[in-house]
Image (cartoon, rainbow, N blue to C red; front, side):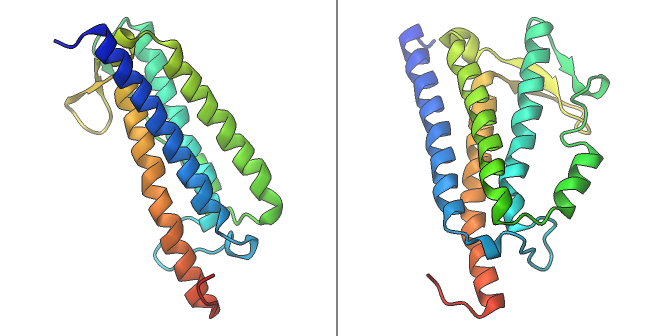
Length: 185
């Protein structure tokens, strides 16, 4: 069994990793010139510039899941009957897919991402270490089996999501440069 001090250290480490991943994403995204933001590579749904918008969706979703977990006092939870049944609403997916951000949109998108990042961070930091690590069994449709979910798990998933897109920004930017005949900066 882990001590409270070990759980507190793990909580601090999870929050720090979340913050690092956010900063890494911002650094990667800053490398994309405004002209590259509306670029959609063949086979992709999203323009390079919508990644800040896309990162918001799991934050909204998982904070909603955490609220439901707390409302049910960590009882088993089937999201199929809740407002969080869909990870992303079809209207939101259509909005992001259609978006072709420009440089004029960059500051607003990054401000929205910062605000949501801080909301998640503050929510995680406000929990005591035991509650931060406390899991509930959650069914995420369409999967039939429950998945253990805690605030720590959620923060780790969101950190992984940032990290996936750090790498993706580099790939998309290289693809855009190649499509434009622009050499690596």
